[in-house]
Image (cartoon, rainbow, N blue to C red):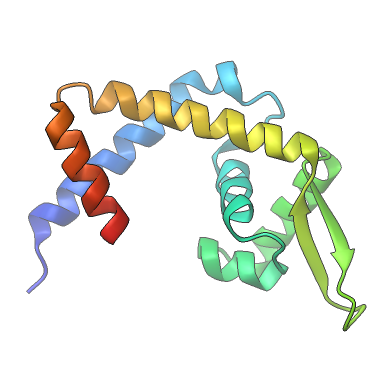
Length: 136
């Protein structure tokens, strides 16, 4: 039987992270990519080069939304699209140098938000949390 308390606590943590980041977005979202654009940039940073279908699978978004977000990020100069050597019909997406800077900025903002949220935890608790998160 699923542990509903874990589900509830995880959901609450995710909402708190989201609220904290949204409240500070003006400080770090210099390209106005928003939460969905940030998710795509962070995902691409972990899996580049990637096809659009890879991003669909990794972000659990539909292809139409993924295509719109990719186009927006391209227009902002944060990602670039290149044809694959094997099949010119297939494009690979990669971060541009500005995209990499933006990912670093987003990662720093997430780290600051988590630092605030996790402030009540001891160093040992934070260490244990890191170990658990690495396992899952």
